[in-house]
Length: 187
Image 1 (cartoon, rainbow, N blue to C red):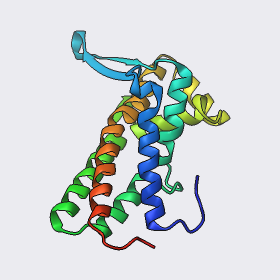
Image 2: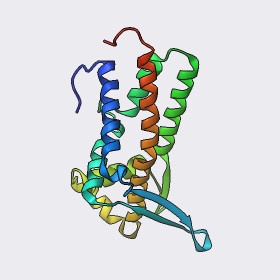
Image 3: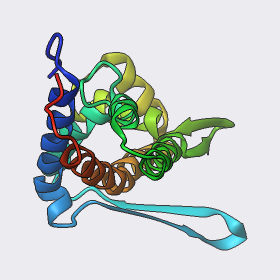
Image 4: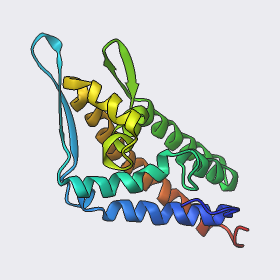
């Protein structure tokens, strides 16, 4: 989706369009994708997630990837930087910084697997590229090598999608407010 020399306005418009598209994905609209974690006996966590229809999940993951991949024009950190530059006042900049912190928290959220911490971002890449979207052989092998721990990684990837959507929606609203306050178009 990357277009050479896309303007800041073009990136913001694309971001808004992609959030709208993500919201329309049946997996999220119908609520068939969900995550939960319950602490069970001996304080051991039990992970539960619903993927819903696999094609619906793939659709949502495909759209969500654009917010997570650094080379994409609607990569969240890039959009946050543009909003920060355009923010008309300190309260808007502070709210934008809070959204970036929330996004970073979601992406850095982690799970201990075999004495290794796996972040939501890493889990998303493993699941998206290792089976749902691209079929990267190395990532497929890494995902399959997890064995009984695979559901935890899939849960983490699904959590990134579900939790990230709320932050993306808030950022979209902020973009609308920032652009409504500008008297001239961005070039």
